[in-house]
Length: 138
Image (cartoon, rainbow, N blue to C red; front, side, top):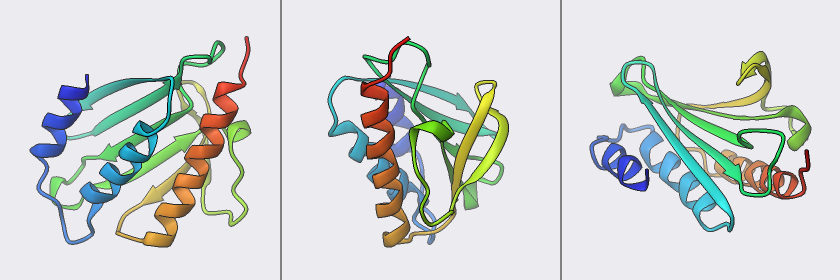
């Protein structure tokens, strides 16, 4: 699976908005954490989804999904989604997507250009979700 992600990233010509670099940064932030299982689902022309689960999670299939939206390969953007009860959003940057995360409500952040402060904000959400997923029980 990691080879599939690497092939996708290597074949992705980044745009001036640096979405590729942003995706890699968020992916690498997760990769520094322990006990994670990754799934990658490629749907060219629609999205490329990196789904991440903590090995201790029992009641859910993931704690974050990072979608590269591929409706226009020259202007891809990211949708980073969590379960609403796994994160906070003190700056109210995300949006509830009813039934948008594997049949449950999702809380998603749309990201469409390099923004250092927003990337750090998303990394904090990833940290929260990872911590909550590691404490999840059935």
